[in-house]
Length: 479
Image (cartoon, rainbow, N blue to C red; front, side, top):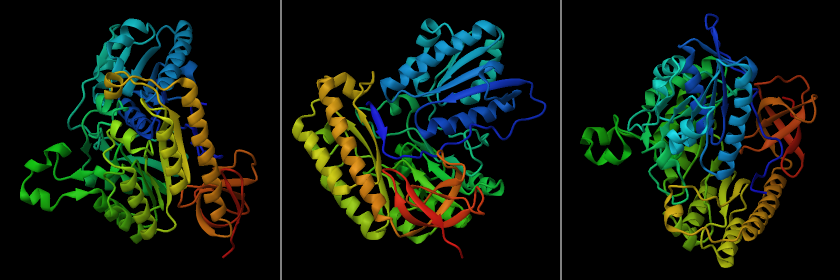
């Protein structure tokens, strides 16, 4: 098993575009892979192309343009995308006018290789070049291949109103930062998405208010590293030292942005992702505790429990500092759920390093997690400087042990909620029963319960009565 998220009933949208225009005559089919930012970017792309005459379709065979928004974080993701390109090639034989483009991180990383080797691809667009899509579309319409993978230092797409795609009409992503400055040695994001920059706060609040007016009940503030959000009037975070004293005095950090969002829409549920241990401040945690509409869940990737491996990963925190942060979070918000990312088999990892990871898991007892075996990504510091020397059999065994530990802890955390009454946002039907709803509580745990007279999109109070290995079971509490 290469990866796993320990949770049973994943909440998924219905892949329906809600904002198609009657006058548009061309059809766009778009697939997204990888992180939540890619799915958010696809909504930006759909918005830009809507002005160019494209409506989205869920039927591949009806499409005039196919776009694949790609991920380079692991080799498995790239292999999946190459297989999808083979599928599109087969469709193109029956629809000669069909154009195919590759977007996102894999597009930036491989650049012209796609145009040279992947004969199906007509267009390659990096994650900062989406506003150039109208020009690129004209190029491929005239029979020429098109490419733009130039990384921007200031583009945030804050002026683009996204077309909501993979949506249930209830929950939506709102991007607040782009890029990353952390330079973890295993990660391609700084190379494929560029330097970190923050979006102007007023445009974020306007998007949140617009979502509420359209009936959305929950948003997720999104970025590769939300806790390093910093707005002081523009520019890269690294240039903050050159800001004026007035700019510094009025700068908005993530804790302030979170509070502004909570105040702007007090009835809207707010989540955020992803946090970085070195950047998450207790001011953020205190803001979460202050406002009931901010969910009690922090996704806090650690990647390893070994100080030696953390240093090799350039994570810039120790396990002891991580434990202190966890302890402080739980002092301020005792009911806060914490989830993780973990890599098994990073280069030079020994059995002692692996035992340190297992002991960290035991200490924290995460609510759930995303776990992977190490996959060398070309261009990263780890690929350039470290030999991928952990045998595949050891990677698989260590990953299996990490997953087994997380399953145990996920069950423990779910058991702790038995008897509690949770506020739940109804997000859709249970995958196993049309007579039951599913939704999530503040801790991001999925709860399944009989529908009774409740409706999708409502907040209801549910008493937790039982649980499976990854899902809470309960019933609505009558007022």
